[in-house]
Length: 243
Image (cartoon, rainbow, N blue to C red):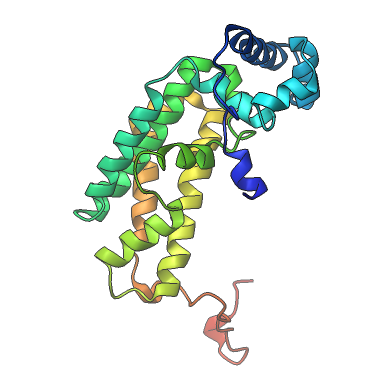
């Protein structure tokens, strides 16, 4: 198992005895207290263990790292969240073969609604730490236990090529990267700076139209990745910049 895979785990093992459950609960509570009272730099595995009053060995017995504790803190009050995510994934998985436009519209809606749910539930804790735990990757790992998943870029590339088979594979890869990056970063920035936008119809519509424009532009509108743009001729006065 790679370090990246290890980071995607929540608790290493489910506590069964009352004493173990109490220990895990104290670790989660310590994480909450640190998030509420201190800066991000203060949130370390050792700091969590100290505040919880447990040894670092006991911490690592149940959690691989601080990100795993954060994930538990964010999701422990929402046991239905994994089911919701799985349902959304199945829905989008069926829709993407039917309509590219509807798929991108629903992908924006699902992404914004997920951020909005967790922000409403956890407030500033989610706002301050949703990037820290790499939530999009963790969500993918969680949902993969219920339905087959691939990276968002690969998923989008397959969807583009299904609806636009005339696109060269390299161009589809390029556009899938741009669509995935735009969606992920725009929604994350909304959490950071304008959480009220997540439920705003205007914001969602603008983001949907932006993604659709990337998906539908003609194949020759983008150069092949790695190609060199043609330089304007110095002898052609029409190519001169205005003075």
